[in-house]
Image 1 (cartoon, rainbow, N blue to C red):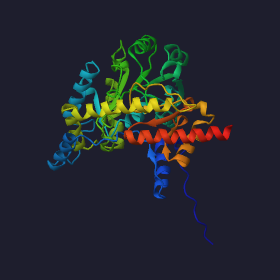
Image 2: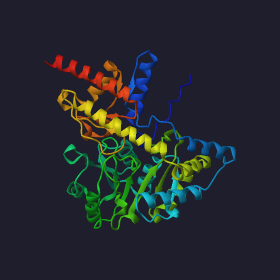
Image 3: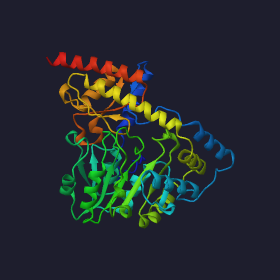
Length: 399
């Protein structure tokens, strides 16, 4: 008698690797739609605008011209130069093209940044609530995640004192995100100056996630890398997905400290070989071409932001700070009497509104929801109406 071999076990590292709840909620919402239910999608963080026509045409032309083979792992020289020029102009920084590395999206640099700098036992300070991949990759690498709370009290930012309390001799990396996902908060110039003074006495690396840097409504962007002594220690990460409505193109870049350029390039070679050259040439057009459609998209996001915040603040038990960047609202829902996950589920299954619980972005997100206002004004208004009905029903049951 033969026995059937059991499947080999997964690595222990996989048990430390998380995911993005947005995609899980999207799957549940799609399942409801397959049953004939109408769902308003406020869970996925991507512009609902098409990629501008000039960028699409540049990509198509590049494919037709034969840019379909391998290219240098760190990126095409013309894109690295365009990225450096853009950062120099927009961030007011002297960025050398040789320090720019290109990848299939900005997200790989979160992996590469942690893997290239951190060993098991090192500590990484990261924003919480924050993009869930931060904590996921920190844990996967065997480092210790140290959450830095973002609070309404500080406009969904933090104080230099809070950062100082978390710095230890084991701190190897500090991750910042401004404008922030999921809160829409920013790290302003004053706080960045305090961070620079604080970290001037500490030898850790920084990773500044700035993928929403060009989606600001009432402030100029300020990067921590521009402050005294930090440019040579900061991985400045940006991408094309949000600003240029290119989420499916998968194109991102980072300006790296010189000692990290070769190690990150090695990680690229080991993982993806290179980023498709035709996609990179579309990126050159995005940075150098007209911005009429981009400006119009941002103006529409501002209009939607104002409308959804007004609507949220009109709901009983709900309050919402005005987000200063990105395209997310992060309302406080503690007055409804429900936890974030329970209310998000009620909205989806009872009302057909797909939103994310604040806890999808860390423990400090409890008491909040994340709503993406990258949807039509009509759908946003309908979503607020549905939320009003669901909240009212909750209050009736509670009374």
